[in-house]
Length: 288
Image (cartoon, rainbow, N blue to C red):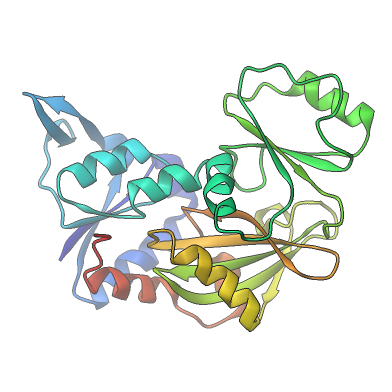
């Protein structure tokens, strides 16, 4: 098997150790995996045919591609040429849009916080759209960025003045929800690999990169069943499924991380998730 591991240049610099780990695990499993910068690829229609160029020359296409950058169009182009993409283009398009993710998961009856969808370009109303407190999120935000907690009218007025999002927004209630805590469940295919509790005593966001801590989280049977309801209705390669916690500790669906990292899982366990992911890819999953 021969594959591409695709990153954009900026993310590649920040994830050098993960890239080396990924390439080494592939080598150990007799897979030829090439690191490819997204900036070195050109995709489009040339001579009435779907085309991928590498350094401006026709590319020798791989059997599969692991796309570690948010670029659903690239994933669609690769899939149209018979390349198996991890995660699939449809999954990437849904999971990198928080509103779309809530829309699809909401159809499964999974518990979640009350959520309002708002289109970009629409002026935010003078009156807050739901009771305080609530959170305003850019549907394309990642890593806890482009997220604001609104606790009163002055903070709502501030958000209205500063909001210049190029994406749609969602408003999500923060009432009866534990702030600064969430549970991330790591999934490969339909299998739960492990889960971590992320906590931040100094911020309403629990993200590890924002100074949060992580500990192992043992999922109960009911919680595992919630996760499996999601995994059985999506085509996943490797993702992180995030849940908020209500006041009683119950899980409330929050979002799905398409380009998920493994820092927290590695920090609290000896699980080699990249090795398991390579094994999953090698097993011939084609999302048919």
